[in-house]
View 1: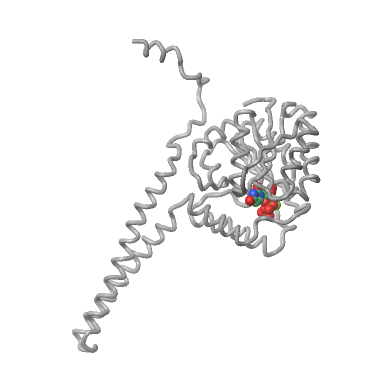
View 2: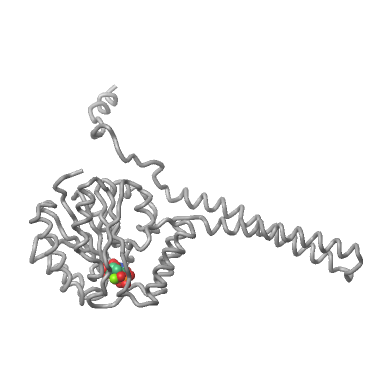
Length: 332
Ligand code: UDP
Ligand code: MG
């Protein structure tokens, strides 16, 4: 841990020309405040990630970068979505800094929570989650759908921190580990906890958007939830297996019932055989589908090639690989 960490504030921006000129100076003020209070290194930066905006966002970022050396920016050739934009920024920053804080550019997340985040880092945490204490400024609909989102995610086996979006501090050490998660469908809220270094939460009140419009309508939120669940958990497949088992048992009961009815002579010709075949096929098919699904689930998790272990602490400093040892053995 560094006692005077170099901070990169990572800010994804998509079509934010209305809001960026208002919030960028607020971020700079905060950065200067943190620098002058001696909490962070004076070379800290505000890194804007333009996510293929179609308006003048990139021009605004370039303009800002020309005005103050603390502002820097990168741009993506096309819109890849919020999660990818944040990841691009974090990966860009990870070798340049000691800590990163990712935050939305619309002023909804309280920048004053950054002090507590940096303090928590100085206390030894590698990851600090910004958690919304209340959602009073959100509309009833947004609140219910957003909170339902977290409950659904957890119920489906994708562990996420309740009411935490993508406002968080991550140390560069944790980012080095995150870089080993090679998956393409990314859901940072679920991936960061997988790194599982020492973490804590700070609470803040979420404000209303300063200008512009939300890019997360219900449709996109559902898509994000679906993405999160399917990229973190194979529970939906398990549910098919479970359903297959239940249907198989019910089918067995159905077959017994059909045969007994036939013996008792309460049926018309052909009914028993039809019911038996339908029940048998239904049960067997769903059960087999579940078993195949289990294997697909395993293949799916394997293809992600996630790290198999993450070392969080050592009693010694790890050096760079021994070049000399290698070259001397190669000479033989
Ligand atoms: N964003 C992005 N790419 C996108 C959509 C959004 O980089 O495709 C950024 C956006 O500029 C903002 C943040 O992600 O900084 C959160 O988006 P928004 O405020 O629209 O979401 P909400 O806060 O309403 O959930
Ligand atoms: Mg927002």
